[in-house]
Image (tube, rainbow, N blue to C red; front, side, top):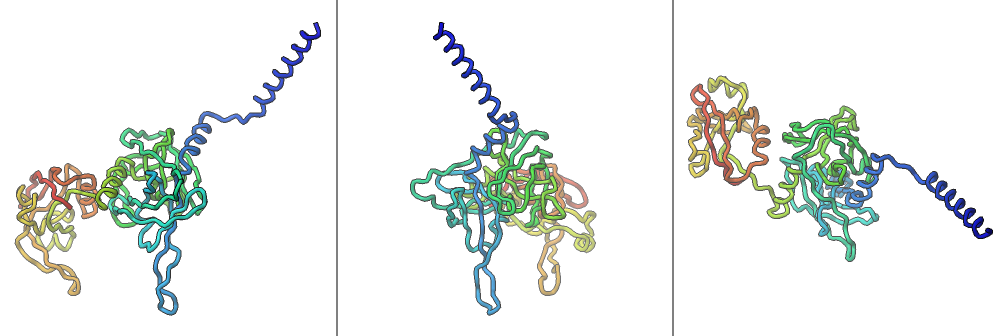
Amino acid sequence: MKSYSRALVLGAILAAWAVFQAASAPAYTQDEEQNIRVYETCNEAVVNINTQVMAINWFLEPILQEGGAGSGSIIDKKGYVVTNVHVISNANRIYISLPDGSQHEGKVVGSDTASDIAVLKFDPPPGVDLKTIDFGDSGGLKVGQKVIAIGNPFGLERTLTTGIVSGLGRPIRNSNNTIIRDMIQTDAAINPGNSGGPLLDTQGKMIGVNTMIASTSGSSAGVGFAVPINTAKRVVNDLIRYGQVRRGIIKGVLVQLNRNIAQYAKISTTQGLLVSELPKTGGAAKAGLRAGTEAVRYGSSLNAQTIYLGGDIITAIDGVKVDSIADYYSLLESKRPGDTVTLSVLRNGKTQTVKVPLDEQ
């Protein structure tokens, strides 16, 4: 009877202890558990990037001084890091800081201003197994989808912020005056220092590279932009393999129209690209695109250049309006040598279409 009573007492104690443990254990919501899981999986693959740039002191001596700072993602255990071009612009030295506090000098493998994507490389310490972030797929993103950003805003290492995809397909002009199309807009807080860091989905896959914010104060205003990972993957692959991105171009000299050129040449539009010169061996000339024949000097006396009037005026590429050289580079950003584009051109006052195979850049 006594052993039976002892068993009852022991069972009661164990039950009470289980209740106590359950009550004292931290209770996380499903959303919190998701954030925690992604952070624990990915944060050690996010690095802090600092640069030094060359300057001149009061004695006209060259000195190195602190430059920009940003974030990056380790994408390969060999030490390859993806970041933004503007994070490392004008840098004479680049330093990559790991989560363990160690700092390593990085080298530029390649950079691409058209997409603002750069690849760096550092040598991992012997025996160190680097954490990496896997590429995801930005092709199926939906507005309203949850996203997570990890970066180093204001030098606060590996900070996590959350938000949603606020918009897709945004054409944004970056600091290099280049239009980057199909940008991801997000309300996840992105501040100075976040540039180059990963934008992640709830599975911890990188679906974008955080690039810029739209703000009058320079701080997050709920409008941030990231280069879609499907663009970054293609660029990164080319930079690692070739040191540059292999893009198709229209081989020749194209001149952006303005009011002065239009008035002088009696052209009915002030927007578009004047085809000034075309090499006979280029795909555009062989396809029937026409260059100018009337040579004129254009520009100030110090910077005057010769352009040729009378050629075709490109007004659209694959049905998308072209107003400027920036539009042209943006629309060909994803094209490869050998791809064919359909040009809408103004010729003798009439609109025609010309299919042009692209040449190697």
